Length: 283
Length: 238
Image (cartoon, rainbow over all chains, first blue to last red; front, side, top):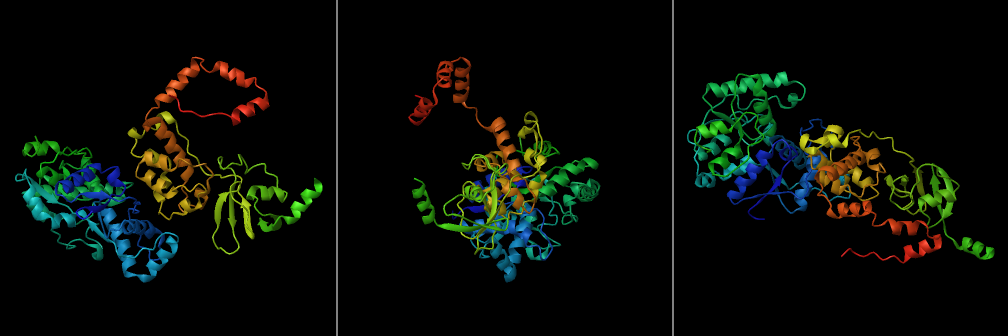
């Protein structure tokens, strides 16, 4: 599997964010570097436990690292920002702390020990590396589209798992550039979307969403692009409490469109199709 | 005859077991269940088919040189020297109520999680799998349920006999076996392909194709019935 990447989906990609998974699969297939789902994987836990002695909540992500290790792979790629953050933090903790790794392996017991050699990557890192290949493969340039990238928290914080500059990231800007899209700067692009407050404090999320989207609109954005299913849900769904109706795309959806691939876009609350038709990107 | 039997008893190797802390000597090679009966216990609960199918005889034990608590079915596990054990006659785990007509997975985000939200508390510790006397990958079906994969939950849990040992060991208090039973029921109602053979057989029964044969069996002498059972030949329908 030299040309493929071992893919960790996470639960959300199998439920609320199927569009994200299918568009990512199609894009990577088209680029000749397919994502191959792991034989076995486990829910990451969705939120990294920060309690120092709470090894229990590190088991699930490390078990997934063991699955990769047993498949003979050293690299795991994930699409979800939450999963990325949890897997990476847990993995880094084991790499940096021998005592924790020993405790973990003692608990894993009959299962093979985790050697601490697996690396966790977000798909954005891979896409950035393949920026030139993407540019060459574009058949349907996104010239007329003004896109505001949004990063949220999980890709950038804490510092030891950040995939880009914490305060001034530009990965998505660079990838969008290779698609021909106009990049709109949004000063709120690294602020939190409200995250799991969506469950029982939607007022908090609505405030966050209004703030983030209003800046994007004021700067002239036609749409927002991001890489996290929870941010996508919050920015998309909770705009209903605002005056805005800005489509919120997964970055792989835009790449797929630029590569001329046919994709489903059924997870969107705000209609993305009219904008694409208006700009001549989709017939 | 009696003398022979006594001789056999003398040759029988005995093992020492402790039932709820009390010491007994029982013949080697007995199952935990028969050893308990040998020791004088009479089962009114915690015993069913005696064949490893019903899941009623959950037992917890420890062996002398191991610190781990082990789980198994009393009717399927041989006693060992130095075994400490107890029977669990009943598992008081919550089982959610639902109407099978109203749990179409197409109409819910995750119908299993709706009924058993504690599934989301799984930390993948795998204690459930280790406690399963049926060697089912319990943790893996819990994880499948978490991501809404009813088919995989049903398939992985297919050999479950509802003993409940997984759930008493679960640090997240998940009711794995009840949740998985719901998954199998939903799978068979909404997702599993219809069986043409079953429909055909039901029709044949309704049309009375087997009435005569059933009548004959029902009136047959016991000895003849046993003979027919032993000599039966199972052939694939052509």
